[in-house]
Length: 398
Image 1 (tube, one colour):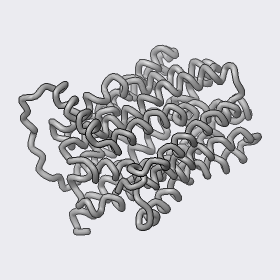
Image 2 (image 1 turned 45 degrees about the horizontal axis):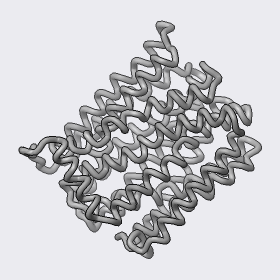
Image 3 (image 1 turned 135 degrees about the vertical axis):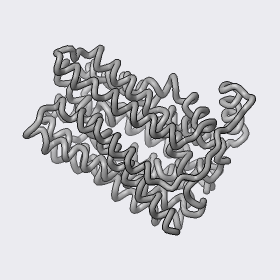
Image 4 (image 1 turned 30 degrees about the horizontal axis):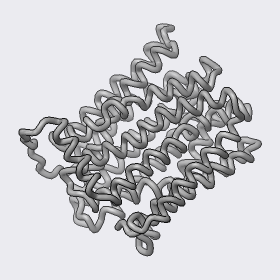
């Protein structure tokens, strides 16, 4: 890896670590704030849904946009907009205007800008590094998220002893600005604005046609949608409900539980790098879904905060199996000019299904014990993994 590749990797990793640490603090603070304000899992689920709905409305358009304009500037613009938007939450709290409706609106807007960042970022990475380094590069970049989700919640748990919850949103806002500083030192490839006589709709249908004619990628996308419908709601809404309502934990307990999951994910990222030398990315991806489902099922037996910390650490190990392998599969099996559109579809599958799943889990938790919900969705996620690994064209994906 030459000096420019090393510089770019360090800059991207640092930017991602800082911005995602802010994301981790934001997610923790938002959910706990709403749950504490309303004492209602249903309302918390609906607010969480509002934070992910933009992917349903804007996700595919964001992919087309990232294939048409400069991806680097799209990333910068998204971060600036997120920074400004999240500052509205402490302002609302300061003026005693923080209602569930207003918090939901701000969460929706912030998430809308995030929808434009991720497809652009994932399509930008293969422009900077050779294809034979993408597994290693993506594995390293994914560790930024794991480290961020260790440091972010852990830092929040410590800071809550000396500052109030609203100040955590200010930290998130600042994190985006610092991340922009690191992005500015990336040695950027030339990416001319793509002049196209086609409409956005035409270019979107071209991306969908690519999926239709590439069966392994189509199946991967369908399973991604179904699997995330099972797993994301419990991850976003189920965990704080389990910690606070079922086990009587505090905000700091929740922060450290989230940090434990990130710790497991960090270990998983290191394992994936080694597994890639022996197994195809398709097999690693399906193993990840199996681990995701099985380890969620054991939350049925959670009886204390320390037990949850151990369980979620084990659960976190399987997450990079899914994220790293799926990212590399798309980067290596589709032309770069389609990457923005394909990653926007993945983002739609992950974040869009999170919106539906979060609302469903919030409402279900009003009727059923949260531990029983984890058991049910764990079985569903496991079945997704079993189906994926049964398909030969998925197992052979490089």
